[in-house]
Amino acid sequence: MKKLQDQLKALAKAVAVLGKQVNQAATQATKLEAAAAKKAKTAAKKAKTTAKKKAPAKKKAPAKKKAAKKKVARKKVARKKAPAKKAAAKKKVARKKAPVKKVAAKKKAPAKRKAAAKKAAAGGPTVLDMVLAVIGAQSDGVSIADLKAKTGLDSRQLSNALYKLSKRNLIGAKSRGVYVMK
Image (cartoon, rainbow, N blue to C red):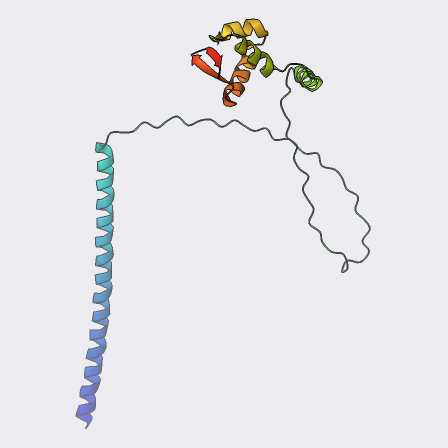
């Protein structure tokens, strides 16, 4: 009986040693798999970089610079605090932020706009009416130079008027710079 117990103990020790060896073999296998995966990854990266070097380089378009926005500093207003009456009864209310006003660039001729608006309101001819009248008087078409001379408008006003009239399908371009009634 004692012999059998000794043999069982010896077998248990042998099984424990074999279990340790199996665990070591498993960890070595996982390490080998990780190393193989790492090698494959580096090989793939090398293949990509060599492919990029062989491919012709594409030129990138220059980046557009964004216009810098000017921030308007808000003035801080000191507020008087009301005396604390009951801290428990007072509810906290979220304060609304004051809207930030944008500062527009000064325009040189606001008086012209007001004068044009008064003329239109008074029933006088508008810029569009003047340009349309000149174009309507000529059946074979009017050039931009003739329109400038007959209406007395500058090139910007004339360009805007021609654009608006063409969008409304009142005039059309016979050729470049020559306009006729539709």
